[in-house]
Image 1: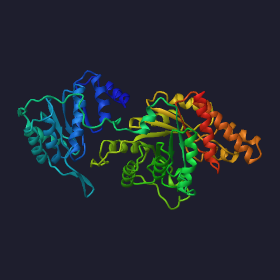
Image 2: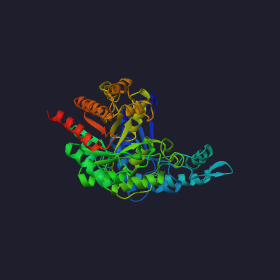
Image 3: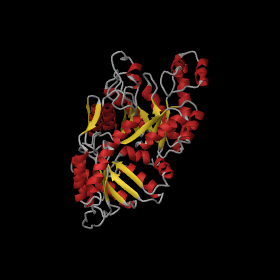
Image 4: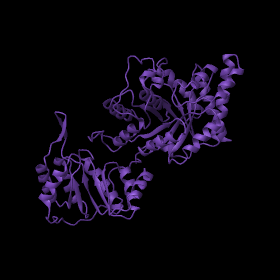
Length: 487
């Protein structure tokens, strides 16, 4: 995030000043202010729509504190409804010694016979400008929906007026912030693991609808005893109906006393349901999520019945939504009690330049760790490791044992996006005729690859193989990796 702001500020270094506007997220504000301060230019910092309720003022205080710390020349607010901006600007004016700016929008848009119009006419907005000037605002402008005529009327109404004197007060101390920083200050066992120096093994436990949840938990207990650190549960992978990922993860965590996270996709739930799912998973005690776009329903067995949901289009948008919840608001700015402070991760397929650029957007949106699609050779792992090496978050290479020639050929056929099985791996299964020998070969190869990766990586994302013995076989791989680290 900081890199992108620095790039923008570098291009604007010839300006007289930099205006940073519509900031709501504390992390984003901190990065933009640091980048802008590096230019040496005067900075005008404006707070955006920080939501409603009493915590609105806490969020404004935190953002103002960052602006004062960065040495801003002026602070203010923009893109607020005219009915809301006057009390907000008045509050800011009472909590800073700096000049105050304010740029209201023209109210809510509406469509009349195909034409987009806004609530406030130029004369009405000029009246709002006069009220802003009366509370000590030094610079009044216009935001969304304002036209040249709006600005002309503001200039006519306010031109030549002296700035109303304000009582001088001490600016907020730079270290004071009543809103938790985006990194979170509450205990979070998932975040603690991600940030620890321990080699962390997360094992994917399928929420299989063909197994009772008690059987899933019992099978996972063997993996926990083998040395797994964390469980993760996929969200209807392959667009196939399974048990609820969040409920299954919560049951695993509660019963086995290991942190568990749920994969959370956007393609199968609308915006209202996603909010409720996220809040509900926090209530269930989950403290981590893997944000994914998810498999389209057309891929699965209900493809002719279920439909893709497009309220959120990608994992990047989901990560931004999770960030809003962390700050205490839903997507429209309304408040939520007990804001969920998830440690959110993201996924990557291959280390191509395009996918790494997309991965950077996920990191900028708030991802704290990366799970990869499975790799099948050490060379594949090393290429992916090198591709993501510059990203400032923890990387977990994925590993999934192949247990038959048919299994390898299916995945090599490109049926699952992001998974690439090299031809030599498929060919290697041909030397074994029996299903049992193929399975033994696949598991031995996976265990050796896991051990080789563990000598270099900081963690492993292990996907269980298919089959009745999947729990015991996965536990065996976990034990082999742990033995390597204990040696």
